[in-house]
Image 1: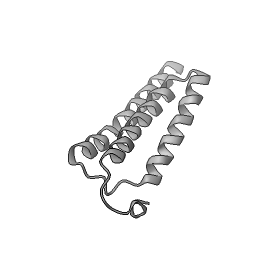
Image 2: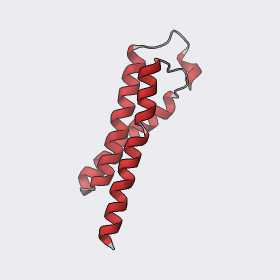
Image 3: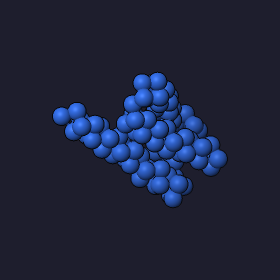
Image 4: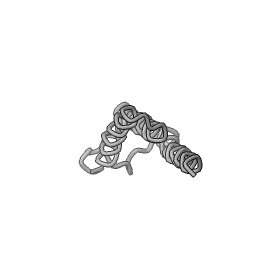
Length: 94
């Protein structure tokens, strides 16, 4: 039974990892970041980083896979927004 639970955990972490890829791709491809919430992205970055620390400390691979991927995708989007920021008021996106 524990093997099945481990497989479910790994599959779930892979799905979470894959779920952010379309948003990252769309943001980079369309060069449109007007609908992205900075609070959402900031919260995701902080929470994913904290969960990565947790995953490393307790050696939980599914946590590392999912949150590492979320962290990488969010950082890519934030860096992209920082480099190609629209000429609008940033408070609009909150």
